[in-house]
Length: 193
Image (cartoon, helix red, strand yellow):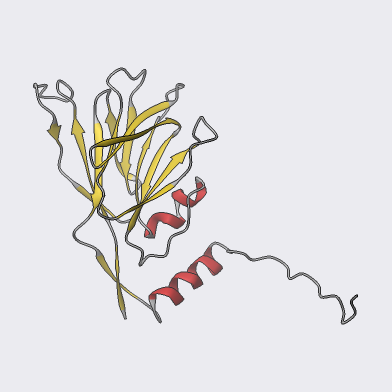
């Protein structure tokens, strides 16, 4: 049996004047398709990353911390999980939004439906650059004013299943991540009150 794994369609949009050609208009770079996640982080900068986040062109929040992970359900059990995000079954069509070490207790992961477009911008007045990586590769510098735009890809990846999607996923998280594995609690020995 086959299942379709969702991917993300991501591109960097350079602010006017940023990049090798300069110019007066935003310049989108070639798009990238990712299976796991897009990570936007502060790199080696000592200051916090400040990232303005928009959902369908509407301002949603500002993330201040080490960065932000935008993950697929497939990527939910990787860096996203380590950063405190949820595990999501691969059949759920969504994008995970997980702040990395946010500098506020009220910042929490969010799961967005697949139809939204997310835009994460380094503010024009930011103190430092940020960096974007796509499935752990193609690391790029984001200068003040630059943004990363992410939406669900139109082209999912077909994957072969051993038995079926749920069986394979639960087996993977139980065996690979030791999900809920612990020594069984002892019974009361048949007695009781």
